[in-house]
Image (cartoon, rainbow, N blue to C red; front, side):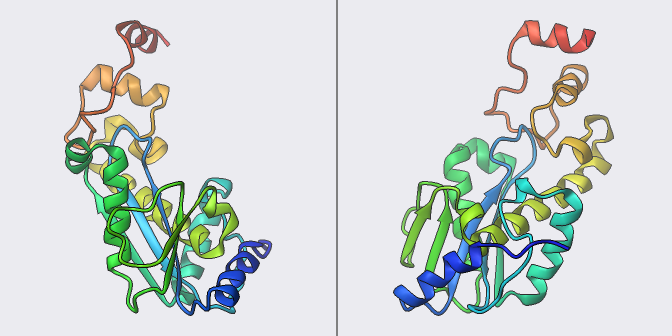
Length: 214
């Protein structure tokens, strides 16, 4: 059984001190990947809700994330998901693509939020709602932790689906992140349409040789 998150108490301060009724957390997954989309999620939870295991998704096992994801969707007032494709990442750059994905996620919330807690140190441009950028927000705020989990699980499932189309790349295992196996597959097979061409897909020629010999 998971432990209740201290993030619920953190969020309560916003309900009390800012007279917020609909507080939305916003986070993204996949910024550091070589392949696949960047996925953002926004979530509004009931003010009196206290959930277990709602924190930075990287602190949880895959099984814990899946279980907590289902619980979040069961109890949330609203969840929105926004996606930017590899082509959009290449066009915008990863920072702006991540913020665009956040914007799309927030736009899907119904009802609209009163206030946003956005993980990180930036608020996306032209945000129409009062908002605060919260460094390590996914570990501090329950609603932002919930967004982190939804974004991560959504993206992981997408990468599992891509594994079916590109089984030689191991997307189901590394989810597009830069691992030795991923670099080795790039050396052997070249990039897929799901790879981010604006990223350094193989660091150096020496790295290619080392990976092939590993």
